[in-house]
Image (tube, rainbow, N blue to C red; front, side, top):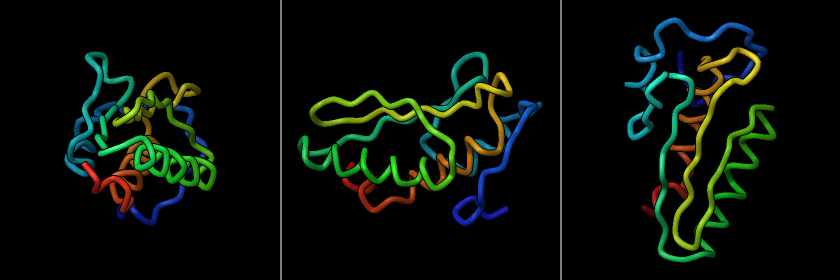
Length: 108
């Protein structure tokens, strides 16, 4: 499955082995319970950080799958989980791949 062009769909069950998907989203790390994946993106300044946050918001809106973001002056940590499934679903990996492919993400 090409995660860069895939579209999220309703997911009610968490993946039984999300580790199989991690290879497709380099730099994203799971929490110890495999309930979320997260990645920290670093930037040179607040303007670049906010441009990235806006671009992530566009993906989240288009996919109807919204991350948690921790924003600071020169970094943003993005995490995905599917609350309705109680863990990770393919939607989390679709969005993680698309966020990683953003031109703004290359500012690291």
